[in-house]
Image: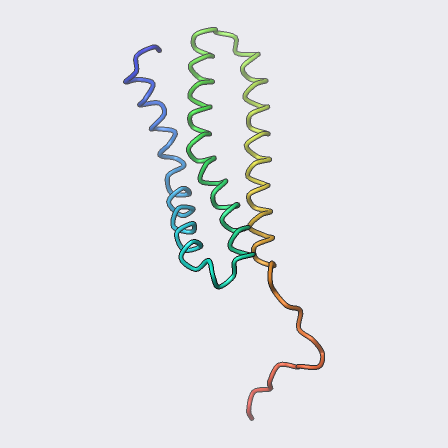
Length: 124
């Protein structure tokens, strides 16, 4: 498994699984940066959330590839299963943090409607 072509092929095959999400996150980051001035507070939270998901998309396949190479070289499947479980939990927590940042972005800067200004009624 020391062949660089095989290693890169393994990385790119795992990377392709993340590609649709990464493209959506990249597009979201571009839109956020273009429209930054309209809602800077919400934009910073949204950029944090989408940026974290974009970074996860690059790093997670790399870590998984390194774990698979180590498993093949050392042959300790039980130990690698524990490490794999720990990393799965780590990625889940990072994704949860990203989703929480997006949730904060949704509600940042919103004003609560007051009873003094009811919404206009539709004409009859």
